[in-house]
Length: 226
Length: 226
DNA sequence: CGGATTCTTGACAGAGCTCAATTAGTGTGG
DNA sequence: CCACACTAATTGAGCTCTGTCAAGAATCCG
Image (cartoon, rainbow over all chains, first blue to last red; front, top):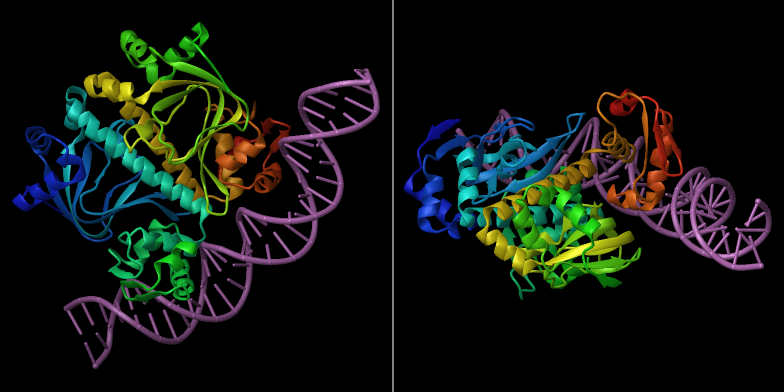
């Protein structure tokens, strides 16, 4: 891990992100003030569940995996966060302790802000509070979606749903590149890697072709029916 | 469904709840202003997923079940909310549409507030915003817990975990009454009712006795090891 | 072109769902 | 207070899904 200062491209990633974009420029700048940037290699741990943390994190590039550990050492992903996402914000209002482990799922660049300061700002400035509320709602909904999918869908259905979430409206045939290793996707969907493989096999008969990270969908309707 | 005005006991349930208790009295009163109370029978639907909703709800007594529907009609519980809990707040910041179905899991009394007004208040008053933030964090964490338990624990382990969450610290032997039907508990834990039954059977050998809704635990440590 | 991951496939076992049949529990009215 | 009816809960049997372990294929990378 190396720590750096904010570069100008970092600044623009930050300011263009969903969270900061809705804030008045000066407010956003106030939060960025004093931010620290750090790099991490794949598999590095940023923090562990129950660690006291006094920062909020922002993914500048790469991928972060949030997960919990079972007694037997098995891991359960809570979320997988790409560039532009914020994490560790919950902790700010929950005894300042992490609710999950955070790990770099690939080479990673994160910015971090003092949570004390951010919390202070949120208490004084309704714009900041508003932005936080929307962030939390969005994350809450994503976790709910995840829970509902786990409980309602089989492995192939979950994969189909994931693929469809990447399909632009209206197209009935399209293709895209997985934004990360199949390993990571499996975790995100709550599957063993083998189960993901098998799910792709099953979907082949519905017109899904997988070559490396490239996914091709011949017939969108077939997937939706699945 | 019958609609009523706030009684004085309703007021005290509201003001004693986690959300309102942290607000200055006048602020709390401002939110309560214009609240509508309604009664619902078990199985009544309050709203459905994707319905436009312009109210935030508060459970005065009884039980609400939030769930999503699968294509095949199966139901997946997202949350089960007892007296004192708020729901429908997410929707306020997400296109004003419900993210789940809400159903009375038993005879129910709810208060509802105009979400437009509450949102307005949150935008003007940082205390309200703060209370909302904490609410969302708490709910987010609960959903995360649920997701992690689903992915990490077997049925008996989930039941053991639920039982332990009702055990006051330090006691190694205790008993309590389930706060709702086994049916509802099964849903909350993401299990079929039969699986819950079998889980209780399994736990019998670890010192758990079930008689109707009464749960007796002989040896807390045995449960924790499970 | 090795060499090391990463991914896929097969075989097996365990967990939990579904359906069906009992049993327990609850409430109602005579 | 009891008998009856209805709902809720348990138990059994069969089956499906997915996790695990092990081996082989593909892919990536220097």
